[in-house]
Length: 195
Image (cartoon, rainbow, N blue to C red):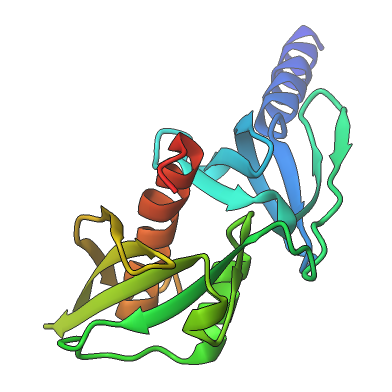
């Protein structure tokens, strides 16, 4: 009888510990088990609960509907209107030597993920110009980006970001490298105030 009690208590403690994670609900209705590490005015930084020692992820607050924290607290986020004209207008162009040209749909999706940015179709309407350089070789993509102001003066240049295809990310190598360039390059530089 005492053994059963000890086993029951042990299982209960394990079950409560196993479910001690934050639940992040995206605007698309997907629920992710995460450990939220930081919430800035524009970005939520987190680690996947299934790989707590793994990489740090960040996502725009616009993509998150709510977070239910492990202690029971709940935070609900209001998304920014797509017509918010306070966002910087970005024109996307590919370098002349790029080997892959992603679709407008991909660019729209990636730029809208970044708080404070909106994509424009005419260079004359832009505040910033993002020039992407893409290369593909042996199932991988390498992407770098150079940021110019509206007068075509270079502001910042990224390193090369490598993208791969695998079952986890469900992206083409080029899309994966572009996502890395946005998250690890452009968003970080925006947070620093570079542009």
